[in-house]
Image (cartoon, rainbow, N blue to C red; front, side, top):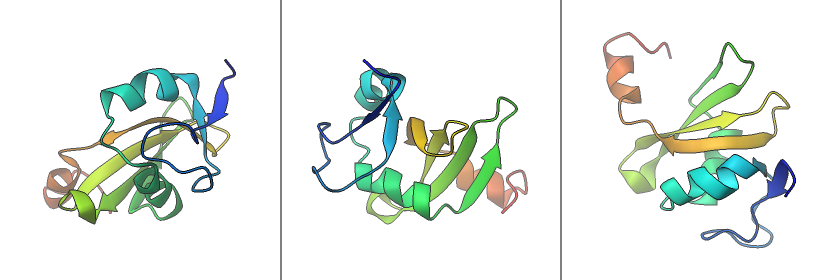
Length: 105
């Protein structure tokens, strides 16, 4: 399997809904750990993040607000190419850290 694949055949996605690329790790591991995360939510966090940072390893982290999940913050990790999703999960403490001033807006 290639490092980058489209996730058109994964649950919760439609054939024409996404042009995002995903790592094998995401397709084989992360999506199984978090099957409740819809591709449209990943797209939303990717395209309209409430925050973006760059990790020491060069990967980009974006957070997106997901109203359908009671406004929870979805954290996505993107490879250095700025287009391949490596991981996605709900960050349960993102908004609490913001309220305490430990997560700059």
